[in-house]
Image (tube, rainbow, N blue to C red; front, side):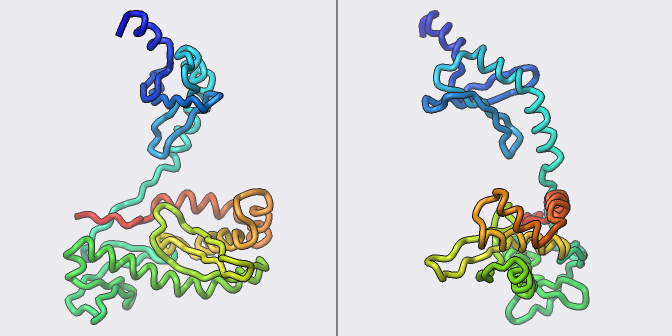
Length: 261
């Protein structure tokens, strides 16, 4: 590369480069389609500086300096809400939660014929063969949360749907990654939609599960999260804002399925 080329390179914010500005380290994403500069705080707390193709580096750095206070604020917020999800051991006495209550794990040699985990006399019982295999043990516990969660939520769905004057969707409980719930509209004018609830949700107290149920039911009538959506949620659950904040705080401390070897 010529000296002139190096000089031009220094003056331009190049896609994939890292820039350091007043203690902040940011990865550059340059696009010919972009017209304005922007900043994003990624889920892992890394910072991305979005720039138009050919943006002068000095302009990019100046943009970061102007918005530094916003970036620092967002990083602090991300740290305060960072997931603290613990891993679990498949050993006698390990604590698991269900609807806000804690239950100790019991490892049994007398496994049920179907091999399923069960709640027996205040203990969550799994077969020893599952406790000795992390993959099988996790599967057995997630299956238990799915079964008991669906049974419990099925009894809550109709009263909430009636209160919100919406159709009652089909229900399932399954893996949803980091989501507590999701709603899929039905096909056609008379098609029933499907509400999916993430199995980790059922570790939380009942009133927070109810909040997620009401939230997803609101999507039966209103897609997206605009003013009409929140108006319907507030109608059914006036204290929804407090419950949402509590869900954010407690939810990041729940077990999401990681097993210690």
